[in-house]
Image (cartoon, rainbow, N blue to C red; front, side, top):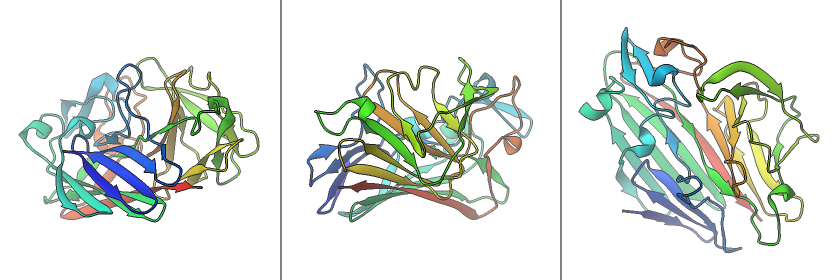
Length: 291
């Protein structure tokens, strides 16, 4: 069933599949800010990525000397979560390890995603619990897609992403396989602004692995309304849209796609987190919708 959070400023929709955000509606401006998952364009809203981010070599994970099948961005986005807590402005969703998940990821885990509304801000918090006496290795990330433009009298090219800090950006390019190619290309900025253009993503996502900023803002040259993402605990950022589509994904990541031609043990992958026995890993990011 779908779940709704609401305060005087925002209304948020969440579905049980993937504990995925499905709506971010500004009640003041009557604007839907989240991409509505047109199946003919891109059939997602804001998938949660777990236990990996990006593509894996040969679509496999290597764990304790054994290979396991693992598709790009993991299995959480297609798994059905259970809502364990819900109020007008807060909800918690939970995915527990099962015999099905252990066919791909042999660890026992509890993966919680919570959503909390506070004024014009939505906090998305991830918690990965390790209930066992051995280490758990994983990664996670977010993939929210925002409608661009916000207003019908604007165009995609009226928009830009503003970085909080001065940046000299380069993207780690992706091969056709979805794996990192090993090459890097400069990303042109206008001061701190990345201008959105129809051809910006012709070569796939921008994969930013050396970013200083931990906050970015999606803005228009013609409209003061804007959306800010704060992601202090996420070292990497992906920015992507399907070429020609009216949205942009701004993706805080803990991990990245593989580059190797053969699987590397999971504990040696870039961005992998170690969750020690009977402990939990916690990270969060926020989306602020501002007039």
